[in-house]
Each structure stands twice: as structure tokens, then as C-alpha cells.
Length: 159
Image (cartoon, rainbow, N blue to C red; front, side, top):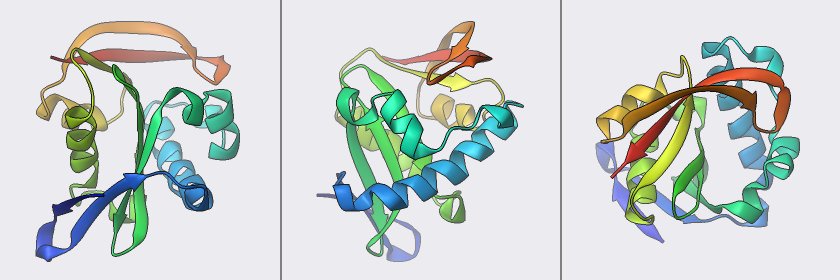
């Protein structure tokens, strides 16, 4: 388990996903994903975690870790050696540096170059830029897991 000190000396811990985390991840993803899609004007494209995680093969294609604070799951990250595919923080604790620490953890456990796609309009893009990612390409395409929707994304790279 990896531990980071947070403001007011509260600790943030990372550990591998466990099946017992599933329902909490459903709640975190569903709330945070709705926010993300709202920024991109794609609210109608929402798919619950129970379905999206299967359609997008989260548990097959990515290493999945959860962030805990005071023994409560507050975030999740899914990545493989070259791509950050999933990163969600419970909206109740957003703005406390949890997303930043999830990115740090991911970068410490991945290879270079490392990539991610961010939906156009997602304010998390500012955080990725702050962490050293650069935008290398703007793309239009179909939304993974919900191909009936067109999306605009920026492909970002970390070297």
C-alpha cells in the first residue's frame, strides 16, 4: 500500500482494487462521469459504471487502484503501461489534491511515453497540463463504450 500525506495530515492511501470496492466505485464513477459529460455537453451519453466497466473492459485491460482517505474509497484509477484510461474522484472530495496524487501514482507505475484522452471541455485537462502532459493531437470520433455519440478529445502525452 502506498501512502501520501494530505492537507491537515490526513492520509491518502492507494491499493489494488478489491471486489468489495465495486459498489463504491459505481457511486464515484457515476457521479463524476455525469459531471465530466456535462462539461462536454454529452449528458445523454452517460452509461453507469456497472455497464461501462464491462463494455470498456476496465478490469481486463487496466490495472485498477483505489484511493482511500480515512478508510473510505474516494477515487479510482485504471491504467496500463502506456495509457491512463480511467480516473475518477468522488465529487464530495474533489479539490483536495486526490486527482493530482492519482496521476502521480499512475506516472510512477507506467512507462514513457504515456498517453491519455480527455474530452473537450473537461476541466481536468488543466490538471494534466500542470502535471506535465502536453496536447499532441485533437481528434473527433465515437465515444468508447457508447459509439452512438460523437466526441471531441485531446490526445495528451507525458514523456
